Amino acid sequence: MANHKLRKTPLLDDLQKGPWPSFVKDMKQIAVRKPMVNDLLGQLELSYKERVGHWKHGGLVGVIGYGGGVIGRYSDAPEQFPDVAHFHTIRVNQPSGWFYTSQALRDLCDIWEAHGSGMTNMHGSTGDCVFLGTTSEELEPIFAKLTEKDWDLGGSGSDVRTPSCCNGMARCEYACYDTMDVCYNITMEYQDELHRPAFPYKWKFKFSGCPNDCVASIARSDLSVIGTWRDDIRIDQAAVKAYADAGMDIRADVTRKCPTACMRYDGKEIHVNNKQCNRCMHCINAMPKALRPGKDTGATILIGGKAPIIEGALLSSVLVPFMKMDKADDYQEFKDLMERIWDFWDDHGVNRERIGECIERVGLGNFLEAIEVDPKPEHVKHPRTNPYIFYEEYFEDDGTDA
Amino acid sequence: MKGSRQAIAELLRARKYPEVLVTFGAHRKTVRSLRSLLYAEEALVKWRAVSMFGWLAAERADLIAHEVDRLIWSLNDEAGSIGRGAAECLGEIGRKNIGLVQHGVDVVIHYIEDPETCRPPNRNTEILLGVLWALGRLGGGKPMRVQKVMPVLLSFTEDPEPAVRGHAAWSLGQIGGPEAKDRLNRLTQDAGVTLLYENDELNEKAVAAIAQEALAHLNR
Ligand code: HEM
Ligand code: HEM
Ligand code: SF4
Ligand code: SF4
Image (cartoon, rainbow over all chains, first blue to last red; front, side, top):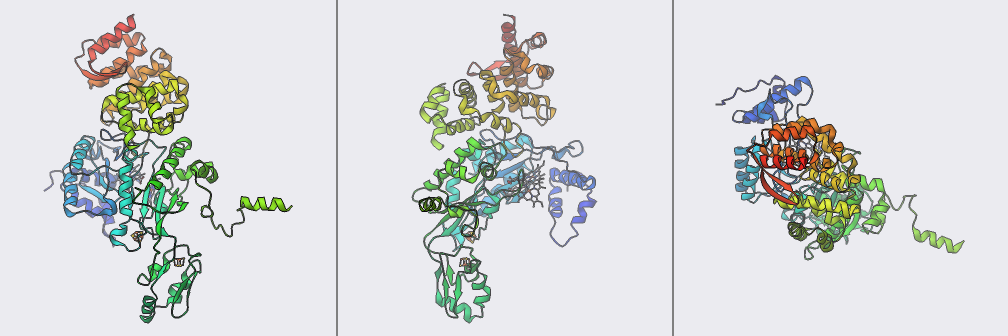
């Protein structure tokens, strides 16, 4: 059925022999109808043979009006593999929480089948619905068809990357704020920053509803928003008893595993010293029917996470221990903070330096002062036992004594 | 930034550069909005943003000191940005205040020397036109600045795309020199047409007309 000659791929074929489903099998299915995927297999086979990659450094491609959303890729062996001479990636902004109707998925697939390789990545680590492989000529037609169906491109380059969130309140009783609403709100508020790169480097937002952090925001975003509560864990003692009656070893599996040793089970009831609880979620995950996050909920704002590129990998660390995430106020407190951070980054950031690296370079103290956030114990590792922390008041008191 | 972008565009259409700072404040956020307007769909707005960068270079260099590094980087970004308008801005800033773009000149020059970025089939023609235009601005009155790239620049007068020939002709007209005149003479019958930004206005122009005007200017 193919009009083109299918590539021979003895080395790739080997990958199909393992126990897991292989991407080679998937690609071969498409290669029959898509010459582009056929040549992709051919080029990959060559890379396996020669042990070198055959993609060139990215080129500058995009759609009119936007500076990001399309990532240019070119083969360095276009004579041998003409159908992957261009192999650009398109990022499509996914819906909050990745909820699609089947009709929406069909629309996306139809567009991509007509204008690209037919291969997608649902979803990329950035969150987007990723379309893999098309030519420069197809970019504007794809963009026109996407926008006609109310889709939009995501971010790429030195801009706000497509924000993403856990499915939060849509499906999960742990959600401490409405992640999907915040993600949508922030995406719409920062359309300009998302589509038109004007930052020193990329900026990733991710929103998780509770400290389980299902979107791994702490490792994968420059600005992580993780749900939390500031009152007490809610306990249903009758449900605790039901767990015990059903044979759960509450001491071994729950209370003794509390990392801050702030829980106790007296054989009948669970007691929590909430001041010591660091909201690790362990006990709640273990007994969801008996324990729940408190009622005074909001989010912790963390900053600086990134994958390794210039400096090593960083996890985000706490910037604001508790923010209410107030829908009625259109999340203004959060937005004001972002504007102050971006002004600082704009002034002090170096090209290709993420905010986490920038803060390390200028020092946390200087950063906090510039964005008008008071230093807090939560900014420090092990504040209660850290011998390097000196409180200013401590010095003042000391002075009057001597 | 949502509302201000449209309002700044309105001021740019009217060429009210100082008013942009008066209305939106002389701070970095306003400059960021200008950067984002380089991606405007309306070509005139993009070009006026370029002119505004030139105006800032002359009047408020302090506001764009960091911007030059951003612009340079956006011409080379591998993470999926397009440096739309970046070369034009570097050219315009350099024209008004060469001290601000010292190493930027070499980056613009390098862009045009690399066949990968500037020749078919993989080039981005819009970026290339910006680079040609920028070389004209940088070399205008100071040909030494772009002397080393002259042979490459001359070769673009034979490009298959009229817009490329037109911009190369305009650029040569700015820079001048005997080889430039020679090439321009060969373009005086060129039937191609291009959009060209000149004296703060964007107009459709025949390549032949660009070449003739350039020659008249050089022979004056
Ligand atoms: C020159 C060639 C390429 C380079 C330098 C490159 C580089 C990268 C980088 C740095 C990322 C991470 C982006 C981020 O999260 O900020 C990425 C993502 C990705 N790339 Fe590539 N890539 C290349 C070619 C390809 C090809 C040929 C494919 C598929 C056949 C591909 C598939 C992907 C996918 C699926 C992602 C994940 C997107 C996401 O997580 O949202 N790339 N690439
Ligand atoms: C087992 C190998 C690897 C895996 C599984 C992997 C996975 C990933 C993932 C999931 C991301 C996206 C992070 C996000 O969500 O924001 C990423 C980003 C990236 N990767 Fe890798 N990667 C690998 C190896 C490499 C290598 C060898 C390089 C380069 C030599 C590389 C360069 C990058 C860059 C530049 C980014 C973007 C960095 C950022 O956004 O902070 N990766 N990678
Ligand atoms: S991060 Fe928390 S709220 Fe969000 S889905 Fe996971 S467990 Fe639920
Ligand atoms: S959430 Fe974690 S730290 Fe808090 S009480 Fe439960 S197990 Fe302990």
